[in-house]
Length: 181
Image (cartoon, rainbow, N blue to C red; front, side, top):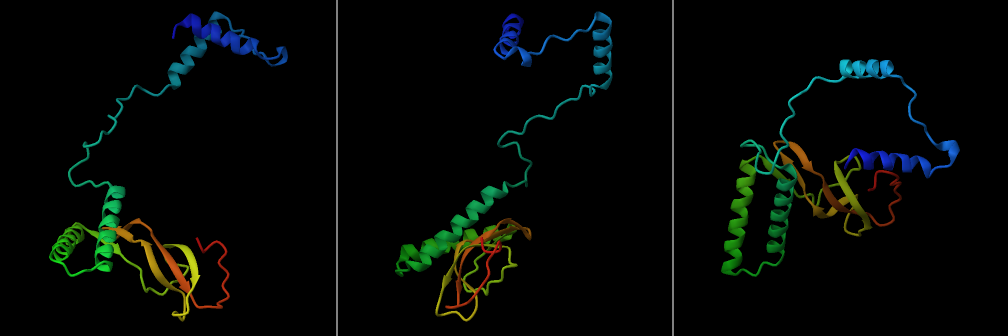
């Protein structure tokens, strides 16, 4: 953009406002402008060499994208559950189950821990996101009846919070407030 068009736009922005809101140019003489430039130069940070912007694939060997790992671990967990649920005993099912198990073992060796929470007694202090609380005749206390998304840990540090559906005894009076997500 040229200096002329920038000046024109600045003038236009002022003229389109009511007279009471227009801001005039600064009334500084040449000496005041020189002093201002000297002060700005004095307080300006020294020229620093900026770090290059990281590009995909520039990661150091051994650095991992935690979100991508969590997604991969969750998809593996879902595939295992679906295969176990739809077990037909076929040879292809057994082979697929073996491949999924070996993939899960490789992730575990790399420090990835995927936790399923089905059947766990639920407490509001757990690091889990309770998506729903449902009445369930088969439980005596609040229990995780379904894991929607597992918790994923990398080297003992949580990289994905689990999401669960909690079954509660029928007729239980509970005050969820802010704890029931």
